Image 1 (cartoon, rainbow, N blue to C red):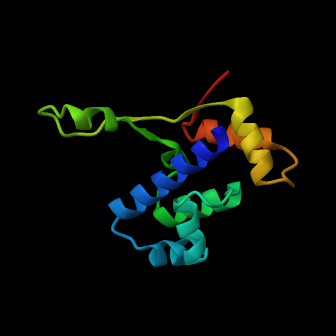
Image 2 (image 1 turned 45 degrees about the vertical axis):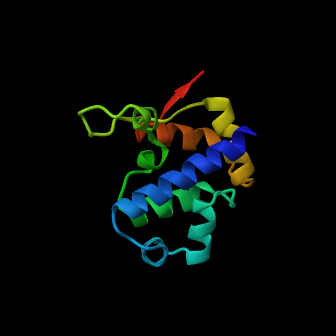
Length: 129
């Protein structure tokens, strides 16, 4: 299902950024104000994470929210590694209506999910129609 893929994508990005910074789940939990077991479940894509917690995790990692949605395009290069070892990072692209549905499911009491979309666009997330 599309939503499960998106949760896996987000969880993998959280883990990758956390590990790159050398932080443990405990350290991220403390800096974000969330529980360590919650951080682990987000990384394993077991949680339908709300926008408030996305913000807290980004703040705990000291990265902009948009960084959690960036797509790393180095997987294709692993089979045929070239002389260049610098990874190529692309911005995440998702359909607005898919993301809106995801947010509505994540955060049922959000009166205006379109405001979240506007905020993420300002953070650099690109949406496709």
